[in-house]
Length: 94
Image 1 (tube, rainbow, N blue to C red):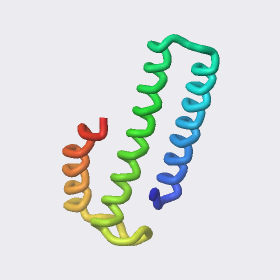
Image 2 (tube, helix red, strand yellow):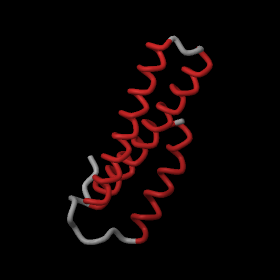
Image 3 (cartoon, rainbow, N blue to C red):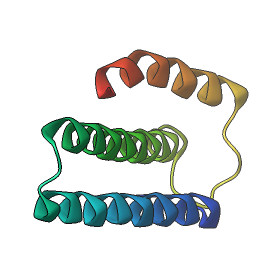
């Protein structure tokens, strides 16, 4: 769960974009669009969902490794550790 107001705003913005992509995909299916076009839209939708998942995961790691939301800023070691974890995990989210 995103905790800071900025993280929440980014998550909601991404979710709205995903909703728009989903609505467009539904309309494309209803119109009988070609499979290639549908696959392209599905790939974009999956990419948007994966990006959101990565952001939420990173937020969760920051909270878990540093404590509850609203605490003082994480140390540079915490920040470096989180960045290292995300570098390992991100490729598997694609």
